[in-house]
Length: 290
Ligand code: BG6
Image 1 (cartoon, rainbow, N blue to C red):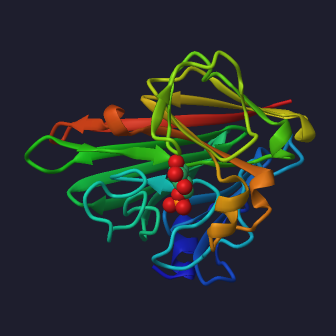
Image 2 (cartoon, protein in one colour; image 1 turned 90 degrees about the vertical axis):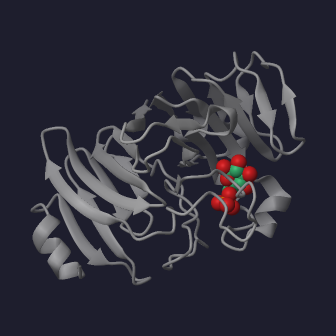
Image 3 (cartoon, rainbow, N blue to C red; image 1 turned 60 degrees about the vertical axis):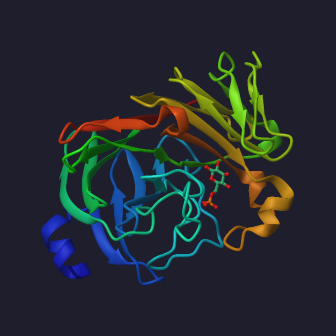
């Protein structure tokens, strides 16, 4: 569907409009008395969300991101599915699965008193995905997965959210301290630290198990972002720090100072087991607290 047809079918007065981004990708732009936001159909990618009571965007977007069909976007909320990081057996397949660089179909948009809701769908490898995003004073993401195969299947999933932060060294993450974790850099497991996470070096951790409410405290921005996941069985915390930032072609050398990823996931030993036709949903809500 071209952009004028999308606008006609899915635009909502002044609250949601569709236009071509300068990259050529089709973009939806949300503007209400609750928030400013934007998304791409490419990857069903939420690129921007800023409730009006905070002075800064909540989601980080790299200035060097690719914005091209077939390539993932660096920032916002990439969706990792049906595998997380490298494919376990076939290194020719892309990291983090097939859907963050796929063209999703827009199915429905609507507005109520709280939010503008956008529903995307994609069928891939005998999975049907339905992704609902509610842009309001909070940002709610819900990904429903249905296994259309006649046999049980498993899959990994992550909502790989990049948060914008004022100064990474000042940030702390509360809520994961009771959980042990796998350090992806050393490939070793570590016991629970019992203290909030602080970023002082490259950080790439998987916390298995359901987390309670997670708080991303950002003193520079004078705000805390609350992350409340549902049906998520793992959390990933990532910051590439100095050397890895330099190695990533689609990421600025200094951009690690202004972001961290806290990913609502179900991966590795906590991957999702799906019986045929039985839907499973992973969801998360972000709220900006003063
Ligand atoms: C994180 C992984 O989720 O994503 C990291 O834990 C990885 O290991 C990062 O480097 C970024 O991945 P990509 O494929 O977007 O460069």
